[in-house]
Length: 346
Image 1 (tube, one colour):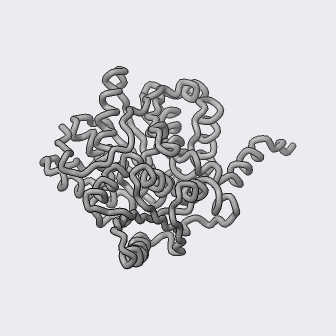
Image 2: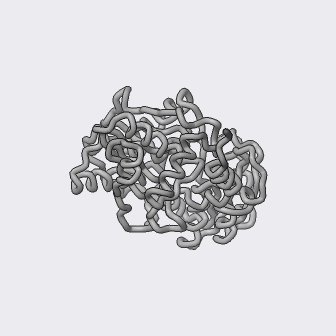
Image 3: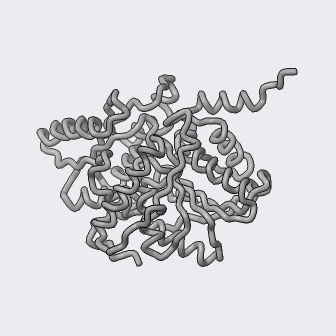
């Protein structure tokens, strides 16, 4: 049973249920088992995505503290910061976004289009941070920027990246887990495995803890998108333990509950390998779905591999959004399409 979450401040950003749909065309094409898609890309705020659920609690906490200026950090094409910028517009908050250099990429579209363009469209102030793999340093830089806003009389709230902070964003996926279980029951779906992206860890953590609180034992595979399994598994375990302490339910996870897979991480964050590129094309050509090269293509690739290997088993892919990044990675997408149409050598 998920406990009453009313003691945690929540800023309502949308009140709809995202669809759970069968990707029957993909299953048929690959000769695999039933594959379903939880469409959190379709939740309606600024191109949607999983971050909307997370931001309800971060921004709820900010408003409860009287903040008027939100600061957060993310990669240049971060979906999180783009969604935050839009949410701040909706809630009447000023937003400052710090863009981190995480991807070895420096073309115009990556730096100016996609999520970056949307950040500017939503009126966010932008700054750049060169140390993209140092979460603690990125948070510290934000705190320094926040101090300058406070000197001007603003009341600031920093959305932290480092995992030492309370996983408020994971609370949003307790709701997501309850929503998913209700849909599975209504549709009589009994999945053998659920696949979700595992990066900062809030979505993976909230979904896993939520399912276990509801008594659902479906294995949840967190697909690594930023760091390898050796680093990601203890991160997720610590996030889950922190969340359970916050909730004070008495639940303890089993050792095998935290499962991560870094098979599709290479060639690294923000870069899609061959299986991820295949997943992008299958989703687009067969289901009209956009999955991005950073997160969701890798998660879908893991679900496709499972479906191919287990024709009798059912899986669910949590589609966490990321559509605007397609435009930021347009150069890579064009390369992928050119490879598809290139004549074979005889």
